[in-house]
Image 1 (cartoon, helix red, strand yellow):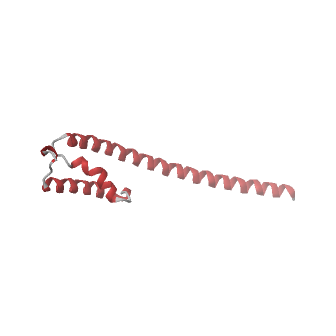
Image 2 (spheres, rainbow, N blue to C red; image 1 turned 60 degrees about the horizontal axis):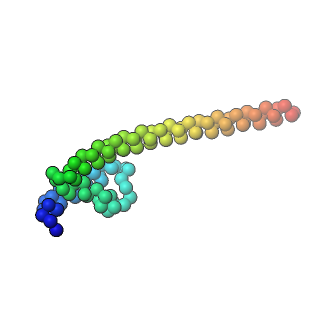
Image 3 (spheres, rainbow, N blue to C red; image 1 turned 180 degrees about the vertical axis):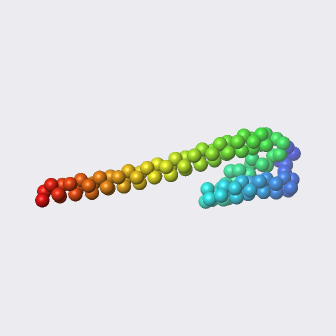
Amino acid sequence: MSSSNYQTPESKKEALTSVLVMLYEEGPDRPGESTEYLRKNIGIYSDKGGTNSNNAAAQSSETDKLRKENKELKNTVKELNKTIETLRSNLKHSREEARKARSSGQG
């Protein structure tokens, strides 16, 4: 193990705390498998001042961008679901009207 890769217990605690805070901030969108989330994200904070800290800033920026995009997509899905329900309701109403028109024309 080279000295450039050595981490003090304190830096390990800081890295773990940072990742746990990230996990907590996921809110209801939090992943089901938290240990996998920790494995994926612990490296971001493991090397303060080195390449990983630059990586962390880039990944944090990317994460923010993806969260924003995710929120926008969820809103789009909600709007599309409302549109689908409206169209279904209109179709049902139109079918009922057509059925009434046919039955009144036969009698």
